[in-house]
Image (cartoon, rainbow, N blue to C red; front, side):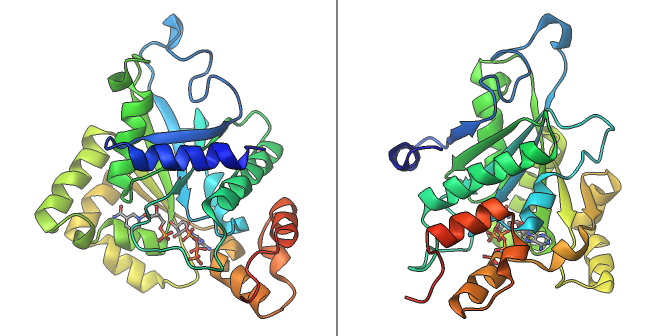
Length: 278
Ligand SMILES: Nc1ncnc2c1ncn2[C@@H]1O[C@H](COP(=O)(O)OP(=O)(O)OP(=O)(O)O)[C@@H](O)[C@H]1O
Ligand SMILES: NC(=O)c1ccc[n+]([C@@H]2O[C@H](COP(=O)(O)O)[C@@H](O)[C@H]2O)c1
């Protein structure tokens, strides 16, 4: 397990540099995200590296988070080359409250979740990272600059599919995160078209099919749905799970919350006495 100091150091490094960057605090193998070494092999020189990125507050990780992190590639029958669990230390909307898990505790739970992913799909390659970048457009640029051609470490392009939920899809297409409609359209054009990103959106318990139909048909969204860059999926009963419901159940002394997360996360939450009343 990553030591407390190294996670805190990683967060401090992110905050102390003006340049946007990412800190990888766990990786399942030394070569992640590449297959063999930190660069291309002659045989697959031209192939892009396709990464599944799941970005969340992990406060705590739920089975919904696990199932989104394990979603398949929508554009190919090949699996993802690598998976990334990402924690933003600058969230677009959320601020830390006193009963929340600390960033160090969240990273420790993310590493447990990475092990759960590896246990459920042997051979899967997973890393845990921390980033100081609130928008998906920004996260995508930082990851490309860190691992792709621009880094000089690779001659490959890095392409990403971001796993998100319905509430986040609405916010991906909200002009307030970009400084207006024109800026949003330009930045999303770069994200989907130039950078080759896509989003896989899991339906949540809170949206209706009619609402979804109307939203996906709006001009700014429809072109990317038609292009296969915005893909909707169902995650079944997990669609009704949330970190809030686990936190609330614990605060209210209710049972049953353990079934909303993996047993390793449930044990961690219990042992760290997280989310009780202050
Ligand atoms: N049950 C779910 N179904 C579909 N998407 C989900 C679900 N839970 C979380 N997500 C998506 O996962 C991403 C990370 O979510 P987040 O960390 O905010 O989880 P959360 O359970 O909504 O947290 P909280 O309850 O603390 O707000 C978001 O894109 C969110 O939409
Ligand atoms: N327009 C955007 O790119 C945008 C908007 C809202 C949230 N986000 C990000 O989505 C992720 C999940 O957000 P929540 O934890 O608020 O559900 C966070 O990393 C958050 O910063 C991105």
